[in-house]
Image (cartoon, rainbow, N blue to C red):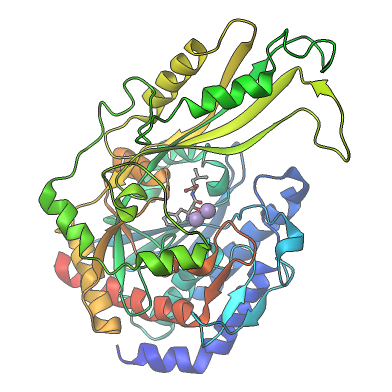
Amino acid sequence: MDTINEYIDQHKDRFINELIELLKIPSVSADSAFTQDVLDTAKAVKNALDKAGCDKTEICETPGYPVVYGEKIIDPKLPTVLVYGHYDVQPADPYNLWDSPPFEPTIKKTEAHPDGAIYARGACDDKGQMYMHVKALEYMTQTGNLPCNVKFMIEGEEEVGSENLGWFIERNHEKLKNDVILISDTGMIAKDVPSITTGLRGLSYVEVEVTGPNRDLHSGLYGGAVANPINILTKMISSLHDENNHITVPGFYDKVEELSAEERAQMAEAPFSLDAYKQALDIDDVYGETGYTTNERNSIRPTLDVNGIWGGYIGEGAKTVIPSKAYAKISMRLVPNQDWQEITELFKKHFESIAPNGVRVKVTPHHGGQGYVTPIDSLGYQAASKAYETTFEKTPIPQRSGGSIPIVSLFEKELKSKTILMGFGLDTDAIHSPNEHFGVWNYLKGIETIPWFYKYFTELND
Ligand code: BES
Ligand code: MN
Ligand code: MN
């Protein structure tokens, strides 16, 4: 299979250009202004799968955006790899903070990416990483190197919570049947430190509304005499953490999995520079739960964060007003064993209970999902590990990530299969932020590594 490197050398310009074409379509699932673009992207992905050598491809309708399905079954007796990815992207706002327009992909060289990186919304999360799998399939089918069966399931609602994917999976058990699920939608520690993601956090996302008087009031005539919803909301939010930055919602930690001293020591061995971390974010210190390191705080510990807060007058100049309402969006990142629906209930009960007289509080759950951990002794993990050893000449480090891909625990529950998370993004790739990018080196390295996974997974299953 040394031919993978030759194949990449011969075709890399086309690989990059095809990805650039896909990145030009603004498939923002959160904003209905982009509905047609999201649908066009599904078609583009289907075409790409056809060209890459799938025998059968389909645009599968769901109550939301469609799932793109593709397969190449070479022998039902051989193992089947199911590739999952998403073709939708986060909103690109605020546009003015981008150095080049988010849907006009531009290649630029940076310190982290001396070979250049593609700047565009979705470059890393997840069009670029998903497309590595399409090109790896092309290589395998074109050169007779596909050792097993492959299925693709690329969805269009990941960035808005995959709320229709449960519906789709329930109705398509047979179609999605597989021996392992392969996803590239996470990151790796560094270009010279390959890693495999072995854990994801769960999520509970809620919106809260605090209502005081029935209309906005003159802050002189009424100020001091009625509850100001913004004052109250901020006070309630501050009370959600104690002086050690523990979350105060009763029962919140009851099911949290505590790692052994040994597991924590192992985690601490992964290369990490706190100085570089602070420097990259322009902060003079980190901040978080007492008793845990930065890497523990952002992976094995649960969190509660305000994602947005609004209310009252925010226009030009001053307006003396006591607002009638204040709002916030709050996300809680959860760890394995915490049930997202249970946590949502606990939060709702607590938040309502701490509201003082004089205001009314409404908590509206948005979406959520369970966390995930995967063992490192599964066939899939071993195959992935060998694949990285082949292309990086280093054993990859298992790493638990702080992000969430709620569908992964659903896959395990519904399809009883393990997911292997082979991510090629870097933390500095600015996913969800302005100037998102994906290194050309990372993109090609992914395409190079994936076919080895297929080979080793098939061999290990023999
Ligand atoms: N690809 C990310 C998740 C991710 C990124 C995991 C990096 C690990 C490392 C995914 O697209 C995402 O953004 N997920 C959302 C959750 C979803 C329910 C909106 C998230 O983590 O905020
Ligand atoms: Mn993603
Ligand atoms: Mn994302």
